Amino acid sequence: MIKPYDRISQTLHWLMTLLIFAAYFIHPEDDERGAFVIIAHISLGVLMLGLFVLGLLWYKTKARIPAPLPTTPKQHLLRSLLHKLLYLLMFVVPLFGLLLSLSDQHKYLFMGLMELPKSLFLQPGLRFFEQTHELTASLLFFLAVAHIALVVVHHFRFKNGLLDRMIK
Image (cartoon, rainbow, N blue to C red; front, top):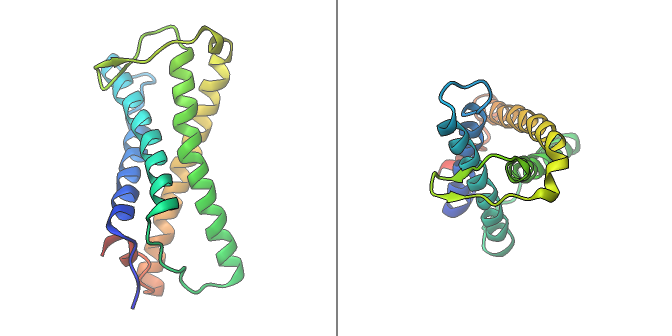
């Protein structure tokens, strides 16, 4: 029988998935909705960063992680690299987005309620933060889609219960 992840790990996983896709598609560039989209995008990023930290704490202290499914050494290496890169990007993308927001001269609000502080020391890095955030966000989105595609292949082609570990 396939052992599932614990409910909290599953919930954190699906919330992060939702935040990744929402932040990617609610993008402020060239959007006529203006401030609302910027506030929504930044708020999603701050939530993503917070959820990442919460997930990391859960994983290191309480999570029930089932043993990996049997795979070839090559598949194991690829799975491990993909997961590590996904985790790295789940931290780096919102971090650079936050640095971008803190270095910009505009006032941004978290959830439309609380103003994010500004830092004059970060302003010289504005363009770097912007380019890094956009590049890593695209990579995160691509890897999330690849992750989903691989899970679908495992579920329908190999019928090995991989998806069941995150939904049961």
